[in-house]
Image 1: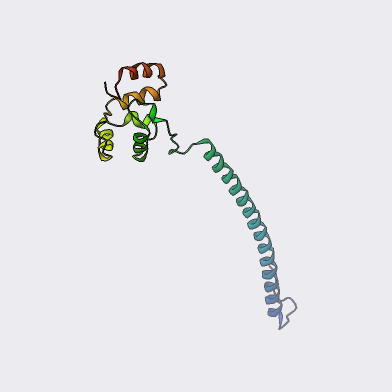
Image 2: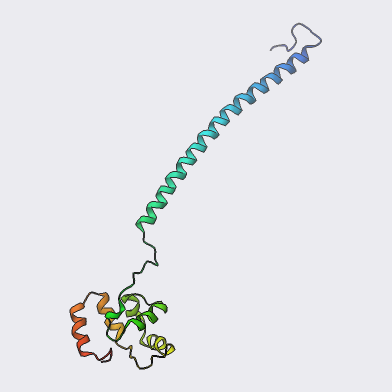
Length: 152
């Protein structure tokens, strides 16, 4: 094997301690520098990934329209609905032919009664709105000629 103190010096343990200390400091510096480079590289990769993620999110927003993006239709096309009733319906959240076509006649009558318009009849409005929604304009016009203010 080997001897730690081949010359028999009394102060050799200080030399050993000094070599271990210097080695530890050099090892720490090398490890710190390598770790710093690794951390810096990983932070750069993370920043680039964040930019890519933001680009992806923006492209998704551009591709997927908001669920609340329902266009307002001209409800006065429906026989029996004038500007005042259209305003009432839109205040009640009915802004499109699609929404009007799914509304019950009872709900529509309730909206009219709350506004003091009991004389209007809303029973044909959902069916007229369905035709308008589906683009059946000729069929709608023919039927509206037979209606009297929205009444059959």
